[in-house]
Amino acid sequence: MAEEVTTSYQLQVSPVNGNHDAQGPVAKWVRSMWRPCAAIIYLFICLFDILQMPSDQQAQALNTLTTPRSWESLTLQGGGLFHIAFGAILGASAWTRGMEKRERAAVEKVAK
Image 1 (cartoon, rainbow, N blue to C red):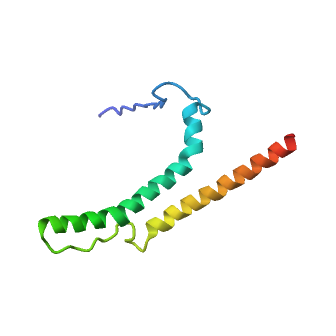
Image 2: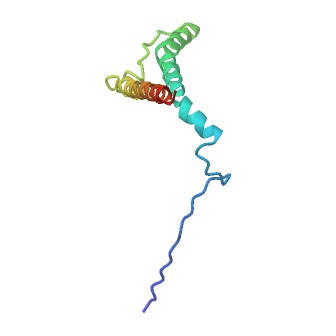
Image 3: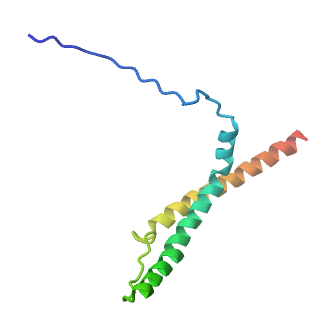
């Protein structure tokens, strides 16, 4: 009869630089700037999908002397779920940011 061989493996995951500092400058920057970065990304997506691509498609049609096709917005497909989801993310983050500022102001007022 064949012998049954069992092997156990242990997986260790550690950062590349070996630094577990959650209070480092990069971590602080990410915590404080993710909201504006998300808003800027959403702005660029909207500008690209609603302004840039329709005008590029019209320009391409003029350059090739073909009948221009209508641009179908990618973010509006699916009933605009993309905009609803991004609006929820940005709205909730703005609300929590406001709460954080109020809480910080209250703590500073009590400390004085």
